[in-house]
Length: 494
Image (cartoon, helix red, strand yellow):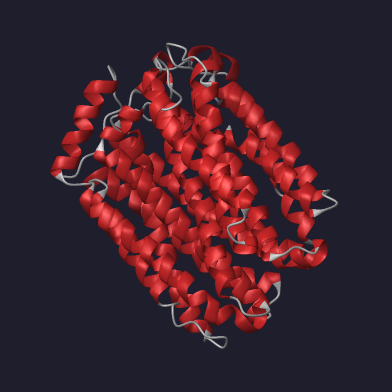
């Protein structure tokens, strides 16, 4: 079949019957390319933070904004992007997102000051918000058989882990050889390749019934996330001053308004009935805890290795290589287990390993042995690798196929909310304990932050056990009856 014939015949869902297994794998690979650059960009900046701080004279709070400007905007717009893709065409939105992301990356590499860098990071995130939920929606509709879908999501989860783990490694090499601005150049060739392949091979698709835009709901989500993040970060720098209190109050009011406004709409930005499903709600909270732990872990590790131990960016990146290796190994294994036995076992393993890995670093010292450090990284990363597949599979299972983009966007949003809160909260806890320069006071100040990360891992364990039992599964079935005529079939435990 030629590319033109393929594009004409493959509108979802009818065209799915004509897709060969090889074509499905090609579409999965193209979607994973977008995930690679978005995920890598979340973490590649972390390894550059000391260099950016030195070059642009940034404080610890400024460094938090360099990371969180990206994740806040990304989290704020993911659900809008998911529903827009369902309405206007997933391939079209996917192409726009790739274009904006590439342009934003080029501008980041040219930023003359920290303020401009933060602004261009936000532009990057606007493009990035159009990639992951739309790509997951495409995958959900391509891989319609439950076990096949779970395995595809396992590959997706592997790329999530690979991208997050490779970020520090690739970033360290680029910073040492070229400079921190080079970390944004790598997005350009990958993004352009994904754009060309999308035009050639990814079929256009949309939901059968167009959902109306929800600008009020979108504005409330932006105020909620931005206000919450501003209050957490700035409270560590200037205390609970008037702007910080106002931001916190606005975030609270936005949450209340969102909960009251959305159920009254015919086509809400997010159908709050989804959260009647215990597995869906559990997957959302687990994603926040897991990605909050991971982003906080990486933030502390980067500062420790470079500012306390005095390692170069490339050597610091090599020290975090276990994050990439273990997530690459464990994520496909997790997808296979989810496909054959359900999400319970991977979630229990994820929570146990993440909690243990963080606890190994609670007594961290300035002269910690490298074998102990690497061992903690291996254990923590293995847990993180196990968590992605059950989160995504549970989030889309039982949800309306017509709202696959929105359901996937909730899972992606919860990840980015977690990443945002991880840097904001862990950074603020660290800042509150500093009594001098990072080099001399980091170790003592970081103990509370490591305990916090271990607590997030423990929460994954408890929630994984509580949200995968028979009663939880029954609530997912009831929610499917309420919200869908054609629900996405879940993979349930044997």
